[in-house]
Amino acid sequence: MHGYSHLIPNGGTNINLLNGDTSISYNYRNLPFNATHANIADTNGNLLFYTNGIHIYNWLDTAMENGTYINPGFNVTQWLNYGLWIQEGALILPKPNDSLQYYVFHEAYINYIVPGALYSSPLYYSLVDMGYNNGLGKVIQKSIPIINDTLMCGEIVSTKHANGRDYWILVHSLLGNKFYKMLLTPQGISVDTQSIGSNRNLYGGYAKFSLDGSKLAVNSPSTKIDLFDFDRCTGMLSNHININNPDSGWAGVGFSSDGSKLYYTAGLTVYQYDLTAPNIAASVDTVATWDGFFSYPGFPTTFLYPYNGYDGRIYWNCGSSTLHLHRIEFPDKLGDSCMFVQHNILCPTFNAFTQPNHPNYHLGPLVGSPCDTLNLTPGPSPKERGVVRVIPNPIKGNILNIEYPVIKNKNNSLKIFDAQGNNVYIRTLPMWSGMHDFPVPNLSPGLYMIQIIDGENRSYGKFCIF
Image 1 (cartoon, rainbow, N blue to C red):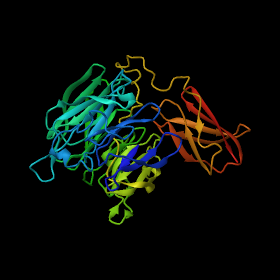
Image 2 (tube, rainbow, N blue to C red):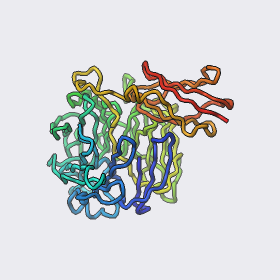
Image 3 (spheres, one colour):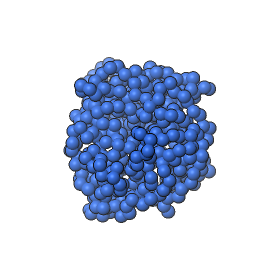
Image 4 (cartoon, rainbow, N blue to C red):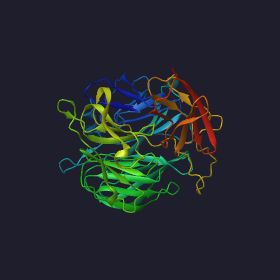
């Protein structure tokens, strides 16, 4: 997870959610970032390449061969020193059944005659092959138009097909209620359309799939929240609900890890909706109101875009250039129990609206559906299960950091046993997470065992307290 700002050039903040703790570090970068940001890593979490919507850079932070100026036009060149400011304006997906090639979906913006209104046209893709230049990659197809219609700026979102291999990609037309739905397969990209939901106007918004791909939420200043069910087999949207939130603005929506809660903000307030309630709109609850904190004089820590972390939490950036991020500790819980903690993450650089655009790459096949035909494993193989890492070990203080290989499409149970075999602690791990850190009760010095229950599977680890 990366966040960058043009306020401090040539650098940014890396937030590492892979190695057992939420480590934060400064990273020198040659490429400036604004709101547009997409990146991709290998299966070990090593960065491969990234884009700010203008150029594609490799993991050595140099321009990839044939990777400059991927979006043509004046409105791109005037932002060279900053990066494009279209949220969800780029997306990187691996080519199905290919370990070296990646599709980059991207778009620029065009000024409309109405003041402040923008649109995008066309939607492009570029194809990267990491087999070139000793693993630094090369853009082998560049700026290929896919959709030549006028589109809402950004809102390029994706989820896995129900076969667990292919990808759906959705964008929205500028006016009206038409979605463009692309299917990425080993054979390439096909395009279809569907008209459903509210009629959009000239002003942009923000879209998000739930981590299981079953729901899509779209926020815009004019139509507020549009909520849909999504069929991962057919790509069809259905059961449209429009939620007339009391606030309006160009800000974010996001789902809890188990898909039961929807979060929304328009800047000063964060709302939670219970998607299991009979009346979703009536279930609205305020879980955060901006507390008046300024990260730096003139830069308030108001709320902007959410990001689902690998640890099951939601990370929330701010509506101005700040040194802080917010975090929701338990997004699956109702009301104040979700624990929205404001500006509790201090970064070494300012973040100006930057939030990476990632689908749930871990999503597997929809087991039991008509499309589950490829016999793919929906999680780690049995050989990969069984080991829970505790980092560091012995633990320091009362915070336990664990990394665990389980099927990431359900909640899993964790138990801690003392040396005599007594169960001294139990909790539920957040869905879709592969690592988590949490406070443990005041345990006496000694040796302890961790057991994670993943259906019929058991994973084990040990840790010491001195």
